[in-house]
Length: 267
Image (cartoon, rainbow, N blue to C red; front, side, top):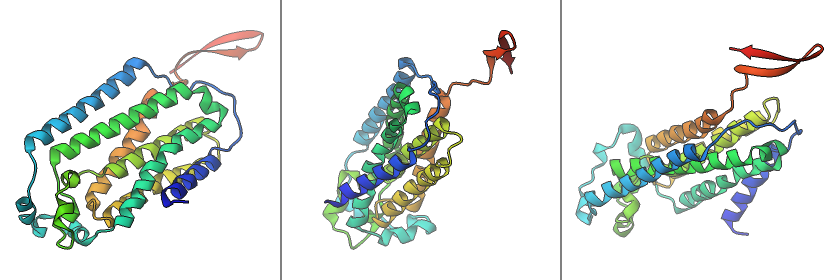
């Protein structure tokens, strides 16, 4: 079995175990509309387009541009990253990026999630679009060289790849963070009393941290790139469900009362 298959299967098994918990009465927890999702996805598409436009106007870089790069221009805390380079670490970071895609889907093993399936899938699409668009726009705008561009031991041909100027911020890290935090947030909403939620949150915190470490070890990103990517992804993954969550403790609610039904207004 290939290495990438092993990683993806392990990730799936972990989240399957996390999502195996006592069933509760199904209810709608989120509210989404095509208009809301359209705005988010449309905004993301605009950012993708903007990134492509900025990069096209900047023009291609040359071997001479690479030779002019100087280690001294890098932040002190990031200079050590320049000497990192590992194809194996880059490959494993790809496994995390691909494997995390199954995490939100594992939620559908529960009836509670299936009751909210449309909303969860729409939020999933919003997160992928928003994180991808914001990451692409930021990379295109900053045009920051990756650490390996400064590494004298890396072949010039490798340094001249179009993605060399897409270091800030780490898309792998933000991608994993957005989906892991999304999964943990939704699981927490579905099962607020579950003992498994602490394990789910632990996985959500650790997965993007490992991904960021691998990207730094691979020489693909500086540590600051991965830290920003972690923060951006985590915020997107957490707040998208929060924005769509149905608030049930405000307004008029129908409740059972002695001798019949009653109306309660909460504020």
